[in-house]
Image (cartoon, rainbow, N blue to C red; front, side, top):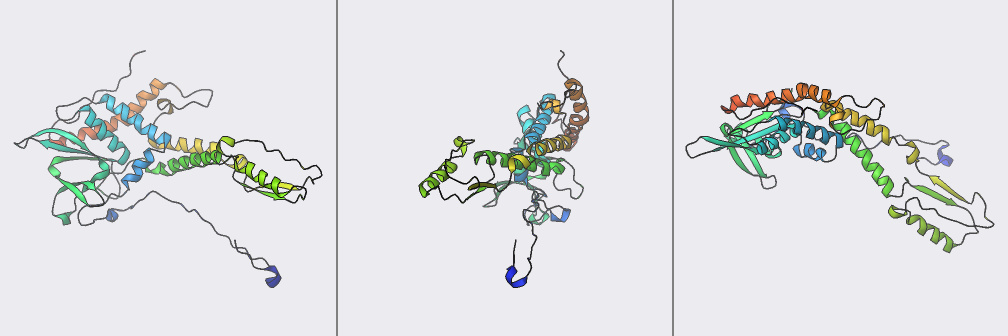
Length: 335
C-alpha cells in the first residue's frame, strides 16, 4: 500500500493490489504444443508433477491405490506378462494416463515377454528424428536415451481431446483441490510448529518495567515454539497501567481459517473426480447413517470403473498380436 503525505496533498492515496495468483500444474494444453524438440515430442502434462502429487494428496493417492489393488486382483498372469509387471504397468497408467510395455525377443525375433517401462521417461519419437518408435530417457541432463522400435512397444493411453501422441489422466479436473488440500495441511502444520499463532505485536507503554524485564519477556516469547507451545507467560508490574501492555494480533488464524471446511470439501472433490466409494478407501463416516453397504459399493465400483479399465487393457491384445492381458471377474469373498 502507498500513502501520500496528507500535509502536502490534503488526501490519502490508496493503491489496491494483489499477489499470489493461481499457480496451475505445468500444462502445455493444445495439440501443437506437444512440443517437437526435433528428437521426440514433449508430453502435454509434466509427468514429474503428476507423480509428485501422488505423494502429497492423501485422498488422491488412496483412490488410485484402491483402483490399482482391485484391478491387480482380477489380473491373471499370461505367458507374456507376469503379475508384477502388470501391476507396474497399471500403476503408471492410472497415475500418468500412459502405460508402456516393451517386448523382449529371442534370437529368432519371437516375443518371449513384455516388460514395463516407466511412463515418466518414455517419449514418442519425432518424424524429424527419422525413426518410428520411442525414446526411453536415461538422463534428461545429458539427453541420453535408448531407442525402442514402435513394433516392440505396446502403448496404452487414456484419451485426450486435443492430441493423440500421449494420454492424460482423467483426474486432471481435481488437481486444484488436491493441491489446496495439501496447502491447508502444510499451513496448519507450520501454524503449530511456529507457536500456534500467526504473529502479533506487543505494544508497551509501561515505564515500571525495566530493560532487564523486557529482555526476559522477549526471551520467553521466543521459547514459545515447538516444545514451548501453549506456555503461559507471567508478568508482574505492581504500579503499572492496565493498558501499559497490549497484544495486537496480526491475524487471528485460530478463529478465522477454514481448515476443516477446506479439508472436507477438497476431499469430496477428489473422491468425486476418481469416482471411488468412500467406504472402499478407509474414510471415517461423519454422518450417523455411515457410508452404506461396502459390498454393494464394491460391486458397483467394479462394474462401472474397473470393467472399463480392463476393457482398455484387453484391446491391447490386438495390437500385440497375442494374449498379453487376461482378467477374471471381480468377486468378493462370501461372508
